[in-house]
Length: 115
Image 1 (cartoon, rainbow, N blue to C red):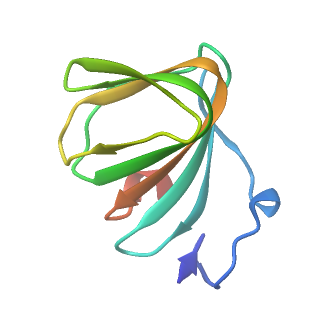
Image 2: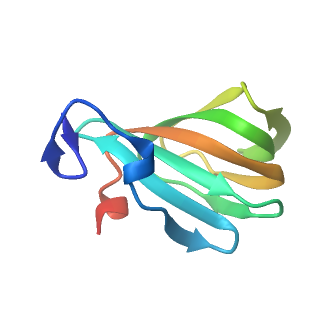
């Protein structure tokens, strides 16, 4: 498995840096190979993951917090322990209602995150 460009089998979260990606939103890439990527995204209350779309399939696990998730014009409030699936090309976004963390899995890897 490639992890941040290295071949390894274990990932220690605390050894990986957070990257700021917007007001109140940070992410860290946990692991990836050509077909799969896992990313933690930390939100402050009020942080926004703006509406967007991409060709990747995505499954997101709500690790903690409360989020208003919008997919294809439909909004739903999700909390720690919930999850959602985003099909390729579907418009989606998130608003953090209570500080929390999302764990995103993408297939294939989000090459744009590696630039």
